View (cartoon, rainbow, N blue to C red):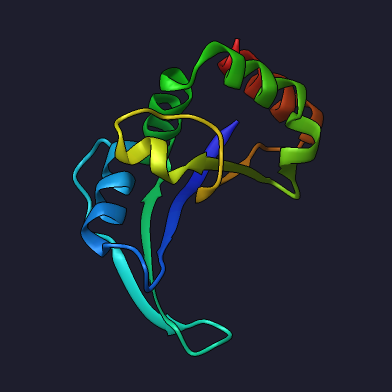
Length: 137
């Protein structure tokens, strides 16, 4: 199993303090990073900022391992049991709680999206799922 890329993304709505949203992202991403910032607008023309952190190869693997190790045991169990739905077409999808991250805790929830692109040669999806379950044990 090889980690090609890990992307962690969150949004700052018009009603949120962008600095607090970045603080949430920094709780998840424990290594120094410079987030990509995209300014966009919602359906009703409300301003939205999108903060994204990209990591490749070994750095992405270390980040994902760090995040998984900080999850509560019950969250790791939930992830492991749902790995079939969360690992699709070579990508692992995890959603983390933005508000709890701001408070310093890493838990499953809403607000922060993590996408890890994982491959193996030859590509064997079932083998990767087994290895991911092992990381979560």
